[in-house]
Length: 295
Image 1: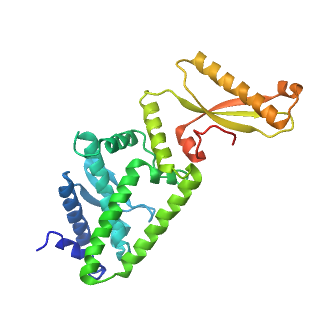
Image 2: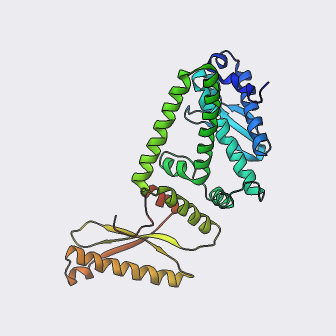
Image 3: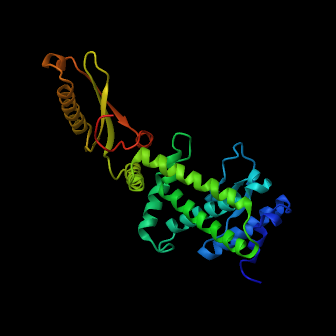
């Protein structure tokens, strides 16, 4: 018997006849196989009822579990979503092993980015879905799961022919990936991966107290004008230096805006200004916040 023969069970014609428990057992064999190939400890597959059908699952390192949406196992048309979830979350288990064991993963720079991302991780939410998808840990887990699902299906299709369920799944995944790419480019620019990696690195440094440089929003308004704003990064070793730096930035912005708008000296004296700290998470919601300039 070929070492990958267990994957035959993932043909839709066979999968749809399995009981729920048999499907869980097949997914556990998949996890055990990939854990063995990558040199890590296998995690237990645990189905769980979830309120949202779009939620795939999660890796729970403390309990060595891969929790998977039970609805994806119950519904035969979600077969490849279930496979993808197991492989995706299993990759997170691999990433954790790489972070904890020096030399476990050959790319040291990638491990560094995973470690920083593990400290400064962006959870999935409606507002932060794009940053969540393009952060280092998720980029890698998504890429790994896609490649491995494609390998399984390619082998099955060579043996048994094309299957419509996978084609529908693949079409959906391609559309999702394209949507994320377009949205990320619109929000963060064409080099959005470098931007995200820089943001994660900065967030890690601030979280660990390595770098006290932070972002601030400076806003100014003159009589009969709307507020205009720009974002700046300021590094200071103490409150006095920080206040001086922000005052200098605010004063400069008042004069530059007065020049742009043609405000007379008397109008400058009546200007209103304000300075607000910008959390890193808000930077991501706003887009390329680290670039200086008016909003």
